[in-house]
Amino acid sequence: MATTHNIGMLADAGLPREDTPAIAEKRTLRDKLFYGLGSIAYGVKDNGFSVLLMLFYNQALGVPAAAVGFAIMIALIIDAILDPLIGNWSDNFRSRFGRRHPFMYAAALPVAIGYYFLWNPPTGFSVDQMFWYLLGISIVIRIFISFYEIPSSALIVDLSRGYDDRTSFLSYRYFFGWVGGLTMGVAAFSIFLRPSAEDPSGQLNLMGYSNYGLTASLIMLAAILISSLGTQRLVKSFAAPPEKLPFVFARSAREISQTLLNRPFLLLAGATLFSYAATGIAMATLTYFRIYLWELTGDQISLLMIGNFASILVALFFVPRLATKLGKKNTAIALWLATIVVSPAMYFGRVLDIVPANGTELLFWMLFASSFVSTVLSMGLGVIASSMLADVVEHMAVRTGRHAAGLLFSVNAFMLKAISGIGVFGAGLILTFVQFPEGAKQGAVPADVLTKFALTEPTVVMICQVLAMLMILGFPITRAVHEANLRKLDERQVLPVN
Image (cartoon, rainbow, N blue to C red):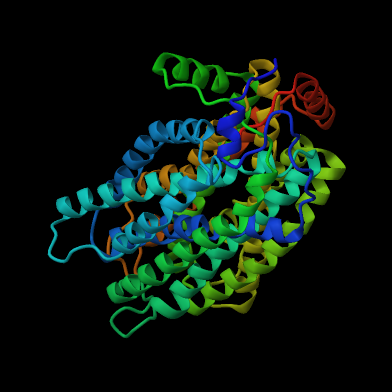
């Protein structure tokens, strides 16, 4: 189904005319680096939400774990409602800077300011007031990170059409996201949350959290602006968008539902949601396990995180090659199978008393190896899921005549936020269920609580992972199907949205 364009409007906006094909510009390593660099901001934010937020508000500020999880979950639900609207808005936006970039620029400062105040709450608040403060500031951060992450992620559809090249692009995006998160995670435990005689683990250091928030917010601001400016020049090479239509709520609602309610997308979305929920719960409880179950020091936790830099380097080059050889669906299944085996191994081993005692060098290196493998698998699943989602864009365009990259990636952004949202909520429920004490000192948590914790959390995580793998078994888009979709779109002259 051919589309019509307002030639004059597009020319005035600096966009290609319909009778002028999009510039065939070969993408370079520089393009991949600038595209990926912006995800540092999301990585920093997500690591903070997943690893430190529960610890800060629960242990340091005294807000009940279930209340912290509930606040984050409410913010996530509000985000779930707004994300598709932001994605659809960016699909239908027009400006001389392109379709996506104005949203990306607009997000930079609010994200940085909001993240700073998340870790610098007012003094003297009651527990109830702190709950409402956490809820409000979390909503602000989630809304504005969506203004960046959704349009930025959706650029992949214009940057690359290749089945394998998209996986390569997205591996850089996930690589930088992990770099951002790991760097601030290492800095948190090795620089900001230093132990003291009164606080041997350093987890109650309010000034440390404050300094962490300031540093992280500045890094997020820089990453968003550098990536946005670095990819701005590529807008001129994107295919021309269709003519902008006036907003009609009924039509927009119909387009959104038609796009989202299709089998390939629903299968992928369900699998991604379960997978990211498992990851979120694991990340939100990981620091608890490291401090209280394994009784690691802040420096040892930092060393584990430093080791994960090697993991993301391996994943950066390994995952695209594996996907080229096996195909994306088979690669995803293989990664999930490995994750189901690896993720609970150390915890169940402790319950069965077959892992070394705390404080031994062998235990540390076993934890190091487990963390290394888990990080490779987690990053790999994220890359593959996003690359599969990009292929759904053309699959749906063949059937609807619309390229709704922003809308589809808005759901992916929501899934990513499920890591911290559902993860923190689930972690709060698990901590409440096992009756984990608040303000606990390392070495003082009852053994029966730790045993119950080491059984409950891995079991919940494994169930989520199994459900994710089962859903992806029915995903229908292979390399051959994707290439056939591209041929059909070229024949119909259905052009992607910038």
